[in-house]
Image 1 (cartoon, rainbow, N blue to C red):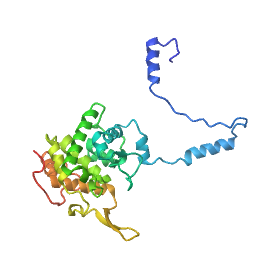
Image 2 (cartoon, one colour):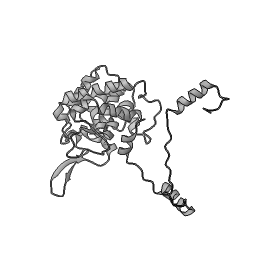
Image 3 (cartoon, rainbow, N blue to C red):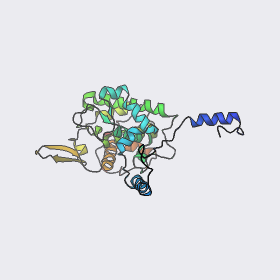
Image 4 (cartoon, rainbow, N blue to C red):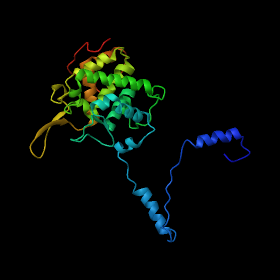
Length: 283
């Protein structure tokens, strides 16, 4: 159509501009120079290999290679911010931080924070995390949400202190911890619209996140390695641990009461008992 004289020139020009914005990747399998063409048996083998030997790319790798998803893009921007660089930065393509890693978070976990912060638990609980109806994060809201998330994280770090925030014994640096921090942002900023959410975030930082704290006893287990060394780790079930952390944090901060007063539906057992520290969140 771009070369068809019957199509008006301005339409052809617009079409050429559109086509220049994308490309379709293709792979050609051809015989080596001087060799005969593929026979039927070889083509059948190629068909079989394409369709039955394909291996799924690990989620952490797929996330690192995705440059179109807004949530991944926002996670990358936050991961590259001066705040995150000061704390150690973000690591790509890893499921967890190795013992020798100097990073503060892996991309996959920071993405959980961003998804929970933008859309709340409804997004983290969804089976399809690529689509959501009426999302809060759009191209128009991207810059504003990035600024608010960074202010929120800065306040959490301020309440905790840099060195304590970087302590890997803290549950806030686990995958469920990052998810819970994101959901709390969504509670405070998106749903409740707390004016001074920085003060609330600083209170989150003052909570003792160490896994030895009895607040977290329901999800922390003793692990013994082959040398007999005992350490504290999370129980199996990342989603259940994140739900527990979210519920407990809401109760400790009084956020559950505010959500109930504003008419928000309780989520994942919010009414279960837990110690309550009232009046930590500004009205």
